[in-house]
Image (cartoon, rainbow, N blue to C red):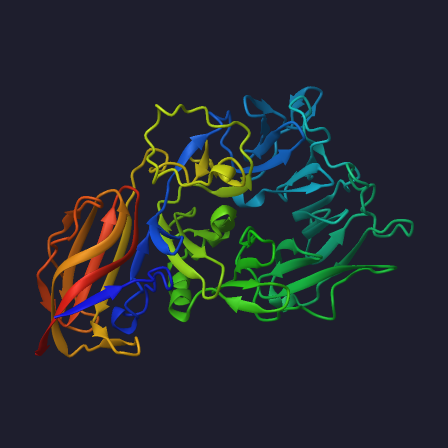
Length: 528
């Protein structure tokens, strides 16, 4: 008998498309609704409704801070609203006191930016809207000085400039053109977009690599704006003088671009951009570029994502946990229903999976009102409510769920808007027999092994544990019945005995729990 102690479960995460017999013991072949926290694996927290009941289905939201309060500016497909912490108010643009509705047709069209404290939202169909005074009494309005026949897929702030790409003039598409405004004074909007006016610094240029596809997105990092085409990435830098901006002699990245709008985000320290390309997820810091996924993970994502609805995919950062979510629609789905969850920090990033996605957009901001729940009220346990005291209302992720017409708060409570979900870890193909003196694992697929019990290093709520075995490499699993293990009460999970050439083990629970490792007694039964 050998006592096998498997720890460091947060080093690798899930490697789903590599056969279990090829993986180190610390890896899992399935990690669903689990995340890396403080060196261990924990079941994800859920999400809960906030901001009351909005009058319209929210498709996009952005926080707007003032010295006194946080306002949440949000849009449906055709209306603009603001939530001031108490009341939802319609601020849709108007003519003679009547709303002039917007004409967006999908969540993915909306985006927003702050220019010198002035909020601007855009959907690519209507003239960009600005909020001149941060007040529920002020309506959105067409961006002053914006040419009436100009439209842009994306509009973003870059220093004192507004930059637009994916533009159309008088209905003529210019999918390779980047346009910028004259710089705006603080607290104001640009006075001109006229690239022909020699007295202004407005301008435009074409990114000529037409074979790299269309401009899809842009996002600044440090002092550089990055423009993402379908198969290339360009840099835009301020240089002043007659040219104003330098775009280089060619694309910065010439063989990779972005999957769709909204598929890029910035890490919590502001040092890296993470984006989904046509066949990978990558990050860069302006110099080096690295892949987040291994080859088999890339292949799996490529095979899973819906080939028609991929444009609804989106990326967002959960800054307090150093986690990046990539939400995407599975095959046959019109909207994202699953996500890859990537824990970043040191390389390699650890990837797990999330199902049950019901939201279509996400943003980070400060929640206006403190939690008025009394100590004697509520159902969350200490394990459920894991937000640091100093950050409990700051940098929170607000989710837009238009299908249910709700705002949701990520990492809040044990359920997903009252829906119970399961956190599951599973490892197949485990053929370990022990360790050498050097610390290297001893793995042998030709010898049968027997396992009787499991000593899990688990905290939180009771979980189900089951053992199984495989007699063929990457073959079917025969499972024992699951047993219930209660942390703090039970010492051993009597999940065996099982015997076979490879061991399988599974941990699961529809409540909050955490695992740091587990130990098994493995009996070497010899070659069979």
